[in-house]
Length: 463
Image (cartoon, rainbow, N blue to C red; front, side, top):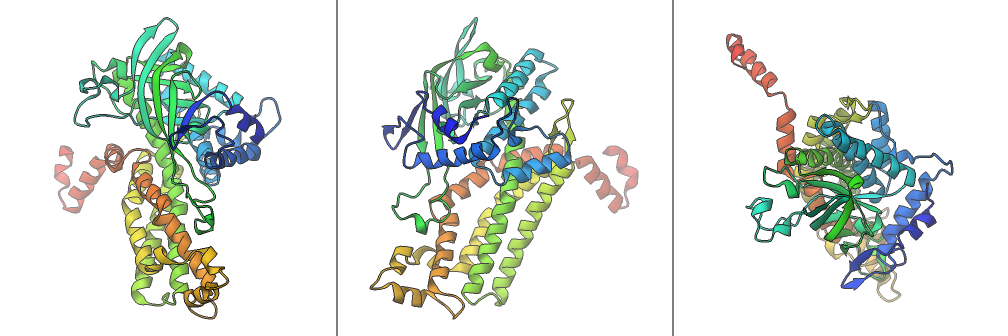
């Protein structure tokens, strides 16, 4: 296993990564991107075990509901790069289980790769969403055929791929890019049916980074995003060679969707788990700011907070149901229940804006206009600013202003915007979660229940 310092050194491998118009030669030393590297390095030190055959606790494959719950609880406290590595490994093992009957050699490659990744203690990020071009057209019907990642050359020892993947969290901070089809493919789209692992420093890989991190010298007004942020990568494959042993699917369109569906399961479970904490935080912020404003006993405020905490409870209940109803595969790996995972993630994503609306309504305009911490410390106006930001003897102005800054940072600034979009899009949009939920819902049981309720049991044979 690697230490944090060894991880930092491993990023100095010639990777081609860009930020705000410039190529970044040393990601770990960059004043902004380096913050994310530091978070990941802390994760390395947290899990480090010097034993020669050690495997990080976050990389272990759960084999029961108890172990799956332990993994989920563990991942509530890890950095995003560590989380997506675990989700990538579980995605690969899920896909291997599902394609083994048709492509046993490919399944073998996947399992061997996972063992190697565990041995090398690397970090993996997920490349799934293509540029897509004209969304109304299939991959092979685009004006530019590179709008979806595709194979442009097949050799005896591997393939060459071209295209781009968008919205890849922490792409520049990992070691390998798990590159998979973004959706199901049809006959004639064999070149787009490619799943493989690509090193970040492979010739032809170029990554452009964006981030919600605040561009302010004083980050005290950004108590959340000023401490931790995760850049998003725009990953370009400019004719990248991939050796055969790293190719997990090539030219089999009927199996292309397996990888996306496998990733969706684990990303949605991770998203659902993250929402349990996020929803509790929103409820906590609403209660704290209502108390600071002296409004915590007002009926409509209490009603809003009650609705928020009921939503938070339902999200946590969905997570519990997804874990408790897990299924164990032939490999001995425990997979969360598809229905509860997707329904819970959908409910959380669909109601996030309602939760935030209630919080903003309860908090008031000072969420956006509260003076900064430096102004509250100013020798000329600070005392007056603190005086008028206070509300009662037990609530001083600095405390209340800090609450407002936290709410703004979490829900109404760059990080808040990132939260709003990713809660919907992570693991696929709302439609994908509705689709999978319908696929796994027992509709026949529902119809039989309806007939029994209507005293029409004689029609049950129609179900």
